[in-house]
Image 1: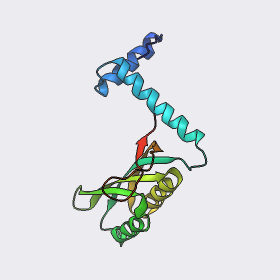
Image 2: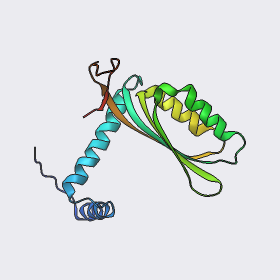
Image 3: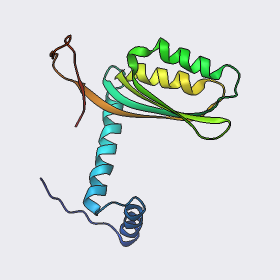
Image 4: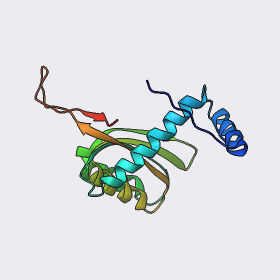
Length: 154
């Protein structure tokens, strides 16, 4: 593990410590590592501007299940893009609103287009896609057919 030292002015150090405490980090090093990983991920996404890199993602969104035919439209979109979906979870928030979290994988551009299509449906609110760059592993086989795993980059 490498060590390095940084200098912060008093206000920035105080604000950073307050941010660390609000997120329950054990120390500054853990917080800095997470910030660096997040920024490197954003940078990697920008560099891969063609959208052909692979990713793992989590799309979460809230919707009103009383919205006319919305649940059917969302289900149809998921079926149309079944190759991207690893898993989906659905929970009822109250008498009208549901939340869904869909775990996705595939080419980043395809995952982004799917997420955009879901979030653009009338009645979907608070849609958020979290992407993590991934690398394709080498093809291999177990007892079943050959397959390839995705592993998070960096």
